[in-house]
Length: 346
Image (cartoon, rainbow, N blue to C red; front, side, top):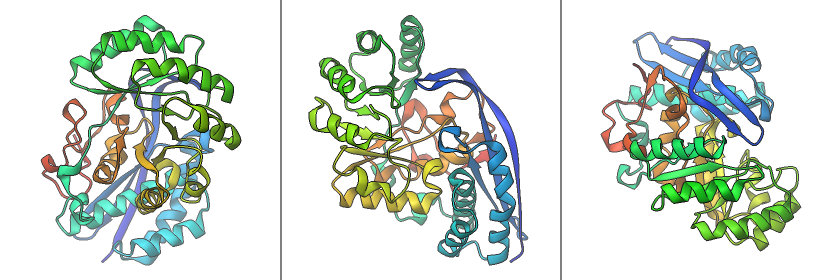
């Protein structure tokens, strides 16, 4: 088998400016990877790098030639373990870059076997989940309007970004227009430990499922402080990047939130899920603002999860890729009629 590889970078505008406690973005900078065999089989994967984790489109495109050289040197895309090991040896960091190659290879291999990825993994599509839809920070009235729009689109699980001096007001407003949705909040490291406990005590009155990353990842003792005192379950996101973090957070949160762009690929993501289970944690898979070149792959993990926060492509003004059907947020793996991850150009 002869393989050819390439990649391209592009900027994808968001439907609305997206604000979290750390800042605002109006577009998502992504890189798409293609692996093609001489029989015409094409695998597609995407990178959505985050500067918070030390990556940019420039760093991704700088290392991809070396990573793709590994793929071409091994020559057999089915040797996923060997390729992953070689990629880690070649580029120690840059998880989003390695992830794009990992997704492209999984897409390629599943297509060669004429199976959707979840079937290649032996997963049951009936155990899939509904993704949450994120309401980014804005003035309270605009957040209310965005919530109403999400409800009109059929979403029944919402995630609300916090990290302001009006956090309780925001949640009260959203709960008033969405009394029946499953609701959780994400502070993106914005609170101090004591502030987090005080705010969570007040937020508990609004029937929240959990609170995501209340304090900075650089303060593990603070995360434990909150976990031991909070009135709601705690999810670790920025504190949970790779497999080695799972044992470190096991005694300071209830939920491990993994992301493909943090951990470096699909095989590592599955290892993290199993490790989290072994440590008694629930598991969520989140995302960046991404196209279906990467989100589609993450959707196939849904039967292994307790929570899915995979709305990254839904926040785009337009996605150049179609993926797993997600009408109203339901990750419909059984409705996928294509092999691989399901990512195809529209």
